[in-house]
Image 1 (tube, helix red, strand yellow):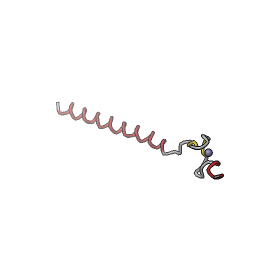
Image 2: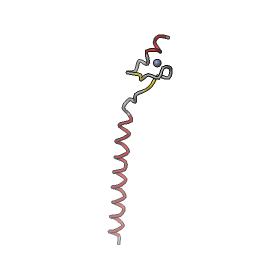
Image 3: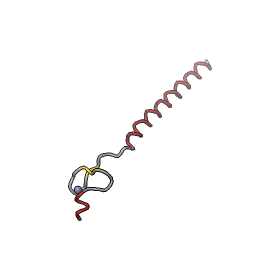
Image 4: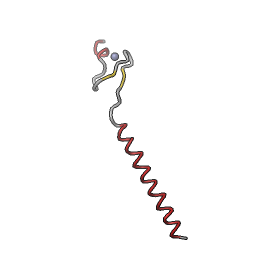
Length: 57
Ligand SMILES: [Zn+2]
């Protein structure tokens, strides 16, 4: 019986590790910069400088 319990706990541990790995992968994807939109004009902001309409002000 102890063997069965041990195997069950091991199975849960493996599932937990796999779940963590699955959570880490999409987390890495979210680190990529999302396409942001300008609040003023609604165009996509390319790079980190900001939108063109911001510079004109
Ligand atoms: Zn803009």
